[in-house]
Length: 636
Ligand code: TSX
Ligand code: MN
Image (cartoon, rainbow, N blue to C red; front, side, top):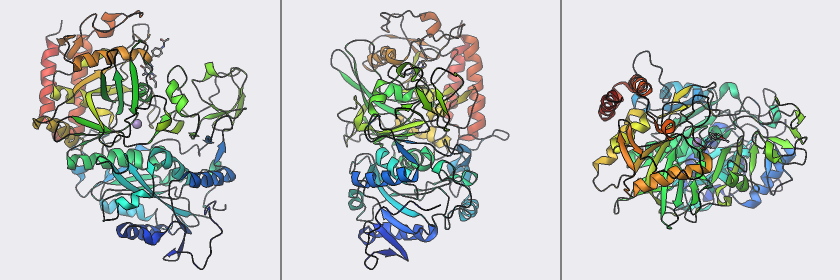
């Protein structure tokens, strides 16, 4: 199979720049900062590409690369929209692979907690530097043979903001180049910000298929599933990812950098890198508040980030849908947040003009769709779009199967983890300050889970420590995005279980420590559950746009309105304090705290946290658990 690389072929061979014996087909290697050159030269020597290409992130570049990928057959245009493309992957490469995601440090317990014997730690995988070296030595040497090594300079966060961080990704995937352009800020300006030897996160990625390929390439999607491995080195701020071209495995700015590596940097520097959306809510009085919210997968985080309120007079604006970098302002004490990303990489199935019109409107141009279906008129299609697509429409599924909508209900158009990748600036409700280098001030932090039983619509924490406890015991009915299937309630503390780059006990302690600085204006912490069921398995809460009613109550609490009552599990809304106009809600069932359920749940939480974290579970959290136990025992 031919390499599709080297967009610029008409170069004068005699004048072409070389690194070692490898030609540079775009960009000027010698002009890069010296410490970047040093690292790149090592990567080039390791991966032995046939050419080096320095990306400038421009539209011209994207147009050329896109055409190459269309000619190769990895992308095809969705002609119904402007500059949109569909991509179908090798069906073996469709999601993040947690079992192959490692954190490497000299000391095991700076990466993972001292789990109790017999408890399998699911809060990160550690490997020793010696063992990982052996693994990497069987993968990276020569891995780009016959391919082009691309160099992508990017910023997480607005270029030049004091809250932003710089990375450079090396990759042999053009799909990654195009996606990184959407999800991060790729620009030659980055080089100026590294001109004085400034730190950057070193990201190396290879699909792991040197040419000629040893094995058949499926769907024109080179990957190496047997050897996939995503490796983090938090101390030297490095990521090495091999074998997968998909999402979080390959767009290294996102989960690898902005959560795992940045989380560790944040611990060292005294800030927070969290799996949170950022949104603003303006009430009918014109008062605006920003909130951050963390949910495990399959809870509709992107839908909440772009909510369309059902009650008049409220406005929601979106700052980000996945990651928040936050720090307490030294002067004012406010918690200020930026969205380090520049795009949305959202789960497509379930997204439609009812559940999330703003997401649909965001991805009608300049977007890439991966593992979705395609309609005969060259549009996208996925499960959830039934009501917006005429029955009888012919669909080609992500696996290439053709069928007519409505004829065979067992046919699936899309992989459950199919994604849209679109620029955030196209979102109709993107906040005017979404790229404010100073960030936005956060008034409340919300945690949520998919909890079919026992857990009320909303709980306010009693105080900061109790809030950190609420986040530590976060659980949710399981997800489509990870490799776990079946309906189980899984622990996902802080919605960070797959994304923490260091010892989870230290992570919880880091959160607790923010209380120690009296200058910090600590936001109130809440827990929400849109997913409680009644005895007939019917949702007790309409969710979606009606969630504004809960957000409104949360903002009242931020303003210290007297609308909450103390309960053993936290503060609950007083009856009548949530606007339920026009809804038919069973308040008692939605807000009840059944003693049996909570008695069992707190016991299970303690067992789980103690098993996972052992002596790394902070004493403050043990104390919160004991206090909550005592309060629950007094329930009727
Ligand atoms: O995203 C969701 N949100 C948050 C929206 C801002 N979903 C979809 C979850 C999968 C990603 C929800 N599903 C929400 C919700 O608040 N609530 C539910 C559960 C639900 C589903 C359908 C109905 C009601 C609740 N519809 C009817 O009862 C008609
Ligand atoms: Mn996420």
